Amino acid sequence: MHLGHRSALLVTTDHGRGSGEGWSQHQWNVPGSERVWLIARGPGVAATGPVGTSEKTTLASVRPTVEEWLALEPVRGPLFGPPLTEILGQLRLSSESSRGY
Image (spheres, rainbow, N blue to C red):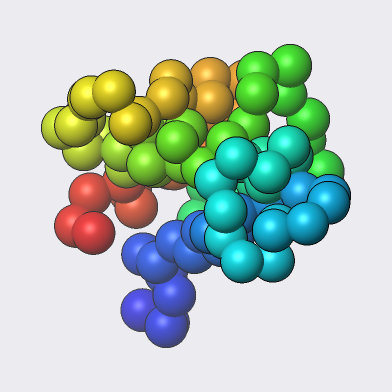
């Protein structure tokens, strides 16, 4: 077994690139600062390049997306958005690597 055989990596940001004063101070109310991107790599993750979504991709949707991706029990609440269902098809782990994280 080689290193990384059962590993997955997800990279995202803690805030988006807003415009105007205050965006670099992590202020939540700066237009655009709630929009984020993410990168996924691992066994079973399709190498498709950029995948867009018609859903609003915000940091609030990252946790629910990862929970569904890894088949974890979801935590729901007012601070969490919906999973990004349009990209989950690109993130499906192979059955061999989907457990044990």
